[in-house]
Amino acid sequence: MPIEKSEKESLVFRTILIFAMMVLAAALRLAPHPWNFAPVGAIALFSGAMVRDRRLAFFFPLVVMFATDAIIGFNKLSPLVYTSFLFSVLIGRFLKEKRTLLRISGGTFLGALQFFLITNFGVWAFLDSYPRTSAGLAACYLAGVPLFWNTLAGDAVYTTLLFGAFFLAERFAPRLRLHAASNL
Image 1 (cartoon, one colour):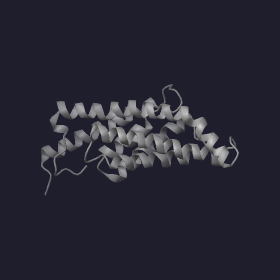
Image 2 (tube, rainbow, N blue to C red):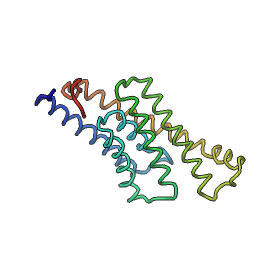
Image 3 (cartoon, rainbow, N blue to C red):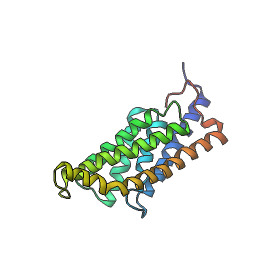
Image 4 (tube, rainbow, N blue to C red):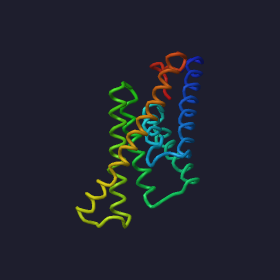
């Protein structure tokens, strides 16, 4: 079934708004902020939930990371960090059909948790900060707990801003709502 002109326009406006919001959030990664209190986890979750084209949903957070890392610098753990954000996009994909407060909150927590687990494992495995023993791994995770809280707080703030702003935009501009036939 072909999409009517008004539905195509709605799809275009919706797409532009989604990407504009993510670009604005991405710019905040370059602003001074506490360690791990950054918008990228929220961008990845939002991208997974809101961008219908699977390839774009996974591609955009990687572009955000690469573009901002080109300015602030790459490190040994960058591949793990990028992989972690792809998992956050995947978590967001489970939210796309049903975006409730509880589901978004759960997705935010899962995204922060998997980021903590993956990146702290990387610190232990690839940096010379901790002995490569089970005690060293435990010490690494324990030392990372304050950063987990920063990650969770940052993800919660930015997820609230992204999903909340989009919810308000849909509410006050009904043409942004997707119809069943739309295929973004």
